[in-house]
Image 1 (cartoon, rainbow, N blue to C red):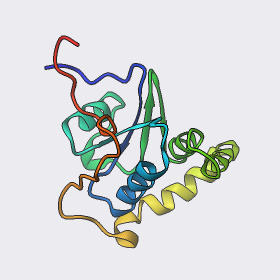
Image 2 (image 1 turned 45 degrees about the vertical axis):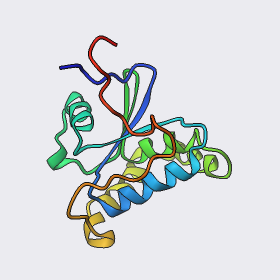
Image 3 (image 1 turned 30 degrees about the vertical axis):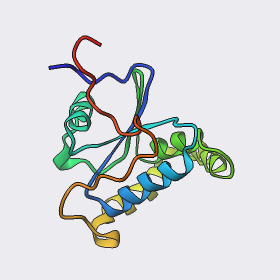
Image 4 (image 1 turned 180 degrees about the vertical axis):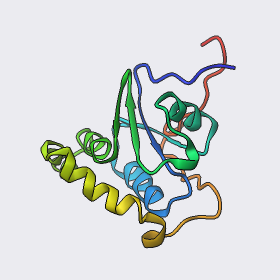
Length: 144
């Protein structure tokens, strides 16, 4: 079985049944015109494998996870770092990453812990339409 690699990639892991998370994914597909981030739902095999690498499980995930090489960001920092690579005006929101983590992550946690109640939950994994073939992470064949 081939392992999923984050080398030379920016990968955002998200909850594929969360309506808010899927809205964020559709936003990225629409606005990330330079293809700066790949996406993987934590309910997919590659997403679950990467999540395990950072000590989390799909059943208990309540955060977005951004992986870039050997670096990992969670919660608000994951969002701000993704926004930093989007075109203006969205890039301007990345300045919020300089807010203290205690404040930005508290705001993030308030929404994340209530996301199903506030925005709803799909009965099954959603598969948004990709804007280019490599947008969603797929396992590379062995030997590559």
